[in-house]
Each structure stands twice: as structure tokens, then as C-alpha cells.
Image 1 (cartoon, one colour):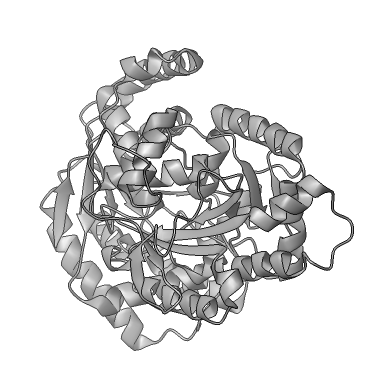
Image 2 (cartoon, one colour):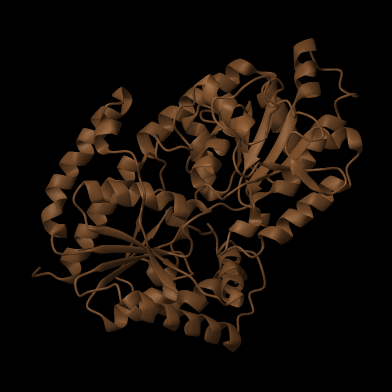
Length: 494
């Protein structure tokens, strides 16, 4: 099925403009839109993806579409779904292959499945379209449907790919070979890095970085009482007294030593407000590097007693520091069938650790029933962390990096392309060369935990970098330019 989603975005341009650091940027966006709107007149925009919640695309679209609408663009959001779980297993496999991982043997059965579901969804999407519309298709799931529609309707079509790899492998060749025929139908494509553009789209692709909304629930400033209240309402801390707002309907749950799940304050408060905290928040995906990150943290802890190079404060920091590995309730992510399996692998690795190490690590499943509550939880977790990590083996871009950069957190990332586009090593954070090397991870964490002034300096620089490059206003400007250029090329006399 395909359904229209209302891109709920509660913040107006006037509200952004009232925030002093954002006012000049918003004025520039208004001027850009005024010059572009004549070229968009009479053309509707439909953006299509495969889920309305969970994951970066579902978070990107509401502010992007909401601001475009306020500027005068007829922008809409369609979500494509299927009741065939084999289709999402296939598209997850394509996702992994584009990242250079997985079985590259794609045969007739896979092509037939993809073609069949794409045709079903194309027929449903077509009901929403009229001649002159611009269809923007996000990632591989709806790509086939968009290609079929472009071939038979008087529309323009843009494919937005949020993933990629900076080198060619048998796996990437298999993925692009599978998708090549569909890519040919599109007027243009958009990637997050030049290294990701495959040969089949060379010469007709642009670069637009994903971006964050600085006033969203996930990124806006949280006063102390709101931060503490959010953690208490989510059962991430035990409150000492009354809280202004009621507990969330679904608490965050923490893996227990016996393998069960319970509110995250069990068996005791984890110390988010008092201890040094290292945090990674991501989808449960092997490419996110959860298991090697945990191994690096374990190596840091287990090597502590033998070290003779530590001052008193440094040693206390390492003794007290704890690790939070957080991700969404995997049952809530329809288009990611591997989530439960990956979480089970992480839980098994945790279960094999000594009890004293287990007590320093929290594996947390975040509730997804309320998008707002989930966003506030992530915001609060990042803000109460001394170090935020994104240890991805591969990363298309990584808004889970952009978000803590905006919050002036000290960042440790991998050298995956999407992360190194954002973090300049030594300026905005530190990068590990090998995200599967536990000793390198331990050493880098140690460097960050040793020096508070260094963490503060990295955080200040990181926030400025996001302001200059990765806020939603810059993204909207790029999309306005691309849409008007695509329309003028598709309908030269329009």
C-alpha cells in the first residue's frame, strides 16, 4: 500500500528567525525561495520513502517538506509499504551490498520479487500523480516503482540515495548492476558524497548533505529541569522527587544480566547524571559497529589496573566511566528486518562479559510509540554524555554524528565517508582508522576522557561546523535549486 503522510513540522520560519544565531540564515533562505518560486509554479513535488518513522530519512522529511511548503512549494510525502517481508529483506541486502557487505549473488528470483513489488507500488503511487509533477524517490526500496512511473508518465523523477561506498567491490558491483536499469529512467540523482556516485549515474548527479533541524525535539536546547525530567519520564534515571510531566507510556528498557529486559533504572540507577558517560545511539545494524565499540570499552576497563601512567583524576575518570549503547525498539522498524538479529548478537556478546564489566555497560532499547518522546530521549542522552561515538564500519552520512556536534559534544567517529565529511580530525572530534580494532577504540576513548579542555574545544568547533554546513536551511536551498533546474530541463518551454 501507499499512503500520504502529513509532514508535521511545528516550527515556523518566523520562529527560527527569532533565534538570533539563525536569523541571517533564514533571511537568506527566504530570498533564495523568492527567486526560485516562479520556476516551481504549477509543479507539485512528491517525496517517497519506505517508512514514516525510524531512521534518518523519516526524520529528514518533515522539516524539509514543512519549510518548503511554508516557502510556497507544493511539497508532499508518500510512504510506500508492502506486506511481503521478503521485499524488505531484499532491499536490506541491497543496502548492505552498496556498503560493500553481503552475498553478491542476486539472481532471477530477486529481480522478479523486486519488479513485482515495484509494479504494485507504482500502480498505487500513480493515483497521486499528475502531469508536471516531480517525484523524488529515497533509497532503493521505492526506486523501481519511481523508474516505472517516470517511463510512462509526463513527470520528472529524481532519485535520492542516502548510502554508498567510496570504493568498488564485487558487492557494490552486484548492487549497482541490479539497480542500473532503474537508475537510467531518472532525470537526476542526489548523493551525500562524490565518492558514492556509481558509473551509471555519473554526469547527472548532485551532492546534497543531509541536515538537522536545530529546533526539533531531538536537537533543541533542553534546560536542566527538562533534561532531567525527560530521563526520569523515560525510566533512565530514578527521580528524587516529583516531576512536572508524567512518565512516558513506554519506558526505555535495559538489558539485564539474565538476558531479560526491564526499565533502564534496573537493577540500579545507571548514573547518567553523575558518572562520565560514553554513548552511541544508532539503529541496530552490523554496520554501526556496536560490538567492536563494546569490545574497545571493555579493553579500556580491563587494562586499567595495569596502567602506571595515570594521574589521580584520569584514573578516577576511567574507573567511573560507563557505556550506553542505545537504539530503537527493533519491532517498530518495518523496513529493517535485521534489527532483531543484530540486537540479539550484541546481547549475546554482553552476556559473555564478567559481571563487573556488565555493570558498566547499558544496552538500551528506546521506545518508538511517540516520535516526540523518542527524540527527547535521544537529545537528553546525547547532552548528558561526555563522549558521543559513531563507530560505523560504513556510513552514508550519519545524522547521529551531526546531532551531537550541534550539542557541542566531544565526538569519536570512524573514518567512514559520511563521518569524515563532517568531523575534521583534531578539530571537530577524533576518528579511529579501524572501527573493528578494540585497542584503537580504547586508546581514542582514553584520549578524549583524559582532557576536559580538549573535549570542550572539539565541541565548540563541531557546533560551528554544523551551523555553517549541516542545518536544514542550507539543505532546503540546495533542493530548491535542484528542483527548478530539473523542471526547466524536463519541460524547457514551461
